[in-house]
Length: 472
Image (tube, rainbow, N blue to C red; front, side, top):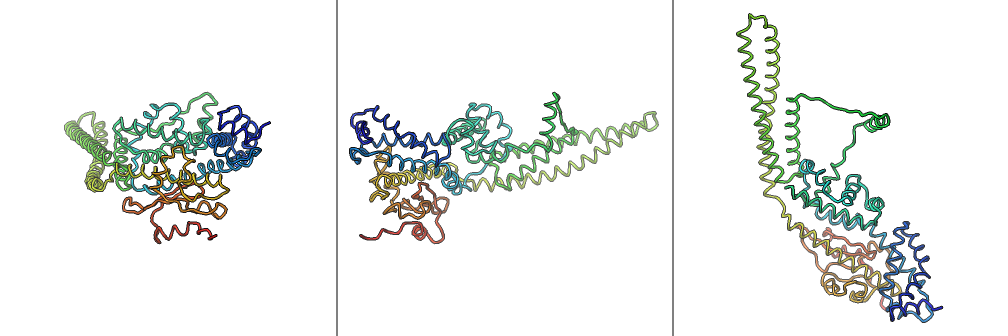
């Protein structure tokens, strides 16, 4: 029976797939069990095992050349499983706390979230236009507030696939809103949906519904308001929402202009209603004066009292109308100031995309350094170009080298805290919205965007770098 090294060389030299299948059969149980102990999920353990053997097939020639004729692959596979499992765990645990948190902190004030009243009327219409899979992913993530792992389990896919599906669905949702004349950014859209899409049901409603459903009956709850009172409440709500939007800075300029127009139309309608009721009052008073001696005097008096009550209500509405007009003037002034200070959305979007790409490049370089050390007795490379074989597209290394420089040196064994030790750093800081920032990737594989600290970048880097190895 051939050794692992001989089988691997047969596959690398002659493309003998039967030889590689024999290697997988020999060691699949070991790799899967080691992965399962670390990721604690059968599905993830299967993904880790597959990644390990895919990596072995890709490196078959280089690994086979380093092995003696009778060598076993057990040690290499176990070590590769460890690093692959760590990468999967880091992707899950640090996705929110590092990459997304860093980017959201950097652009926290750059994207104005839309007001709920802007997207609420069309939300269910555009949701129904989505594919079933996309709609289900959005409902689980932002309507039920589940994390990507829970979304993936519910949909029968991995965490990464769930995140990609949710991102695709949000982008499609934004496009559907744009088709309906509602312009909104992706970040602002998910913020306002997560905050407002689901409201707590009235206390006791669930018990009432359950009782009615089990009994085969339908319970209907309704609140009846007069037409005049409903108009007054609608007007008050529109004014309160509009002023609150300006104060909080969550509405967009276009929506605010539309609200002003709506409010003006409602004010005009209220004024017309007031004039009509006033005329009715005057006509009734005149009729009552002519018929004081008739048999219907009592009915006329009742009508007169009713009209006087309506006149009192109209006076209160007139005062409210005056207040709303004053609020309109204040709103117009606030809109003019907001329009002058509105951010350049295209520029911010470009900066955000550039930083996401830069962070991804830094993370790839860090992972290349980690995999190199795994294959070289935990020693880091002397030059970043030594990690070229660990990238699917080696041509990118020249681009990465122009963006970053490797600062870690020596051995992985000398790293006391991989999450706090810089592996690569951006060659120079850049200025974003008046602030200097710089990209770093760490020995554990995660990447961040760091705003210039009070002590400066150099002092902060010194506190997060390995000391130079002792001279031989």
